[in-house]
Image (cartoon, rainbow, N blue to C red; front, side):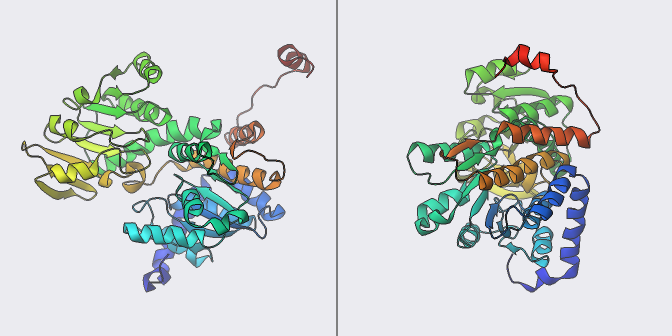
Length: 416
C-alpha cells in the first residue's frame, strides 16, 4: 500500500477486516490449515512474494501463510481488482503490501518490483508477472528462490514457454492443473463470478439474450453453463476442434466469431489469448452489444484497436464505457476489458477459493519440504495433496464416501 494518510484511517482498515472475517467464516479448509501452520511454522524464516488479485479471500491466504512463519510481500495482479480497504487491513496487521486500486501501468510495475526486491525465497504468482520479472531483470536474486506456485492457465503457458527456452531457473508448482483447482475454481468459480460481475454492473436481464462465449476451456464451460441457466441462448467460438465438439454435445451452438458478432448481445472472452474480438467483429455488432473479458489480461477484446476505431468514447455507467463506431453503432465494454469478475465484482465465491488457496498453501509447503529432491522446473501438484484437499472439502460438507477394500485394491492395481 502507499503511505498516504488514508490507509491509517480506522474506518478503511476496519471495513477490510469485516470482509476478511466474512470470507474466513466460509473457508473451513484454510482455517484448518492456518491452525496447522501456526503450530508447525513451515515457512519460518522465509520471505514469500505474492501477486494475486488483492481482495478478501487473497488477504486471508496471506494471513494463513504468515501464520506459518512467512514474511509476506504482497501486490495485486490486476490494477482494478485491488480493494483498498483490504490492502489497508493487511498493512494494519503488519504485512508488507504494495498495491492500491486503479494503479497506472508505471505504478503497477513499481509495485511488482518492490515485491521482487524483497529477495523472496518463494513466489506465489497469478499470471506469471513476478516469475517473469525476476528472471529478466533480477538475476542476482534467482539463487535465493526455492520455487513457487502458479495458479492460472495464462501463467502456466508463460512458464512452459520459459522452460522450453531454457530460461526457467527454479521449480514451479502448476497449481492450476490440480483437479481441486481447475475443475472447481475455473468451472464453477469463474462460471458464477463472471455473471455476478456482469449482472451487478449492467443491471440488465440475461434471459432471452444471445451470449457469445469465446473459448471452451474449463472457464468457458462454466461461463456458458451459467449463461444457459440464466435463460440465455449460448454461442461458443473456438479454435480447438475437440473443444468445439464438446460444446456442440453440451447443447451449444458453435460458429466463427465473425458470424457470432452479428447476433450476440453479450460477449465473454475466456481464452487466455489476445485479439479474440477485433475490428472486423466490432463493426459487425449491433447497437448496444456488451463486451467483457474473463481471461487474465486485457488483450482478448482488442481495446487498443477499439479505442482507435471509435469516433466517440464516453462513460455510460460506472465500469461501463461506450464506444461509438464509424457506422454509428455504439458498443459497450465492461471494466476496461479487464477481468470482469474481479474488476467489476468480488471474484470467485469464498467456498471455491477455499479449495484453490488450500492447494496453493499445501503446494508451497510440499515444495519447501521436498526442495532437495525436486529436479524439474515444471511440477504437477502431487496427487496426495490434491486428494487431501478433496477429503478436507468433503469433511467440511459433512459428506462421507466409500473406500476400497484390500481385495478391491488388489483387483484394480495388483500387489504393487
